[in-house]
Image 1: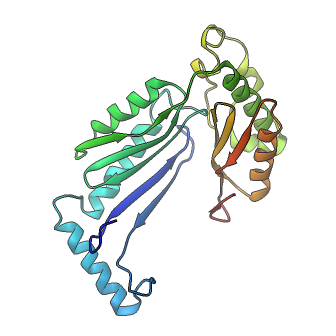
Image 2: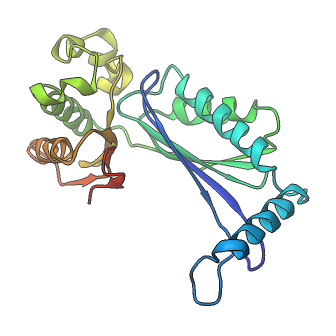
Image 3: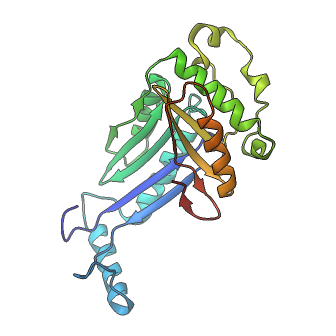
Length: 241
């Protein structure tokens, strides 16, 4: 980050539409030489200077407009019909550019996300850093098994409104291209990302016990090499390690 320049960065974690998502706005405020934020009147003065600098800076949006852009981006991505439990998208704002990140189980989701964000008024550019996951029948098997094991637990049923096993019956799309070609529809609070047999759990859970259950079930799936638990515990407001 450049010195003496206040930068507003926004990171939003998006869950499957129409279920919940989380958003965090991180604002870099001036720091004193000791590395801690100024307090009292100094802190208020710094905030005023920061807001004034941002308002007068042609290379970035004012805070109010930035938050409007954030809400618009979040809404557009959550509304994508191809965004499902096996995908996880996040985004950031830098200047007048929206930076897309995360994982897409199909290439079409990456292109769709960039297209809808480019159409938002005020967005001048989109940096599309979404990683398209490689097609793999083994990964698809892991997706199905992980989904069933996590959401079939009685204590985890509250995180979805989908009848798990009924939604996993063979279909023409699934027989032709695997579960990613015809994923189950509905609300899923926990997203399952599988990349070459490595699993990443993303989303929000109510408590640490539920996060541990999801992690344990994912680790018990045959063929899984590793599990990265990125679940956010809502009532503790921190990420599980």
